[in-house]
Amino acid sequence: MVEAGKCASCVTVERNLAREPETHAERVRRYDIRAVPTIVVDGRIKVEGMPDFPWICGDAFYAWLERRYPLR
Image 1: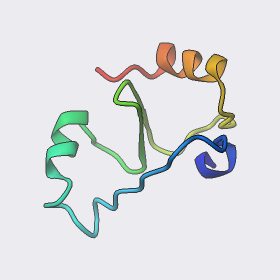
Image 2 (image 1 turned 135 degrees about the vertical axis):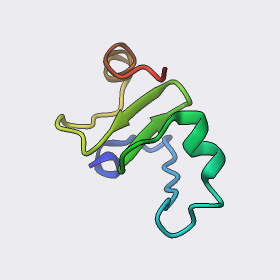
Image 3 (image 1 turned 135 degrees about the horizontal axis):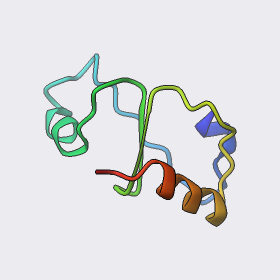
Image 4 (image 1 turned 45 degrees about the horizontal axis):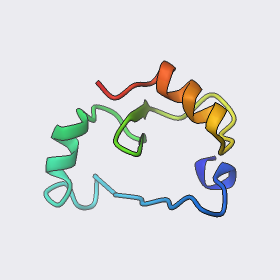
């Protein structure tokens, strides 16, 4: 869903926590990841679980995400 909705200038980095837990342990702590999938955007937004909304790249969408899913 995220891959389909991202614009040409966006970069998606997937980290597989199940396959490489030790490699990503610091990120799990930093972002307080408790469920997968978890989507972190620019270190400011965290969406836990499968998104239930359409992912459409754009400033208005990211502002909405930041209000609704801030990284705590």
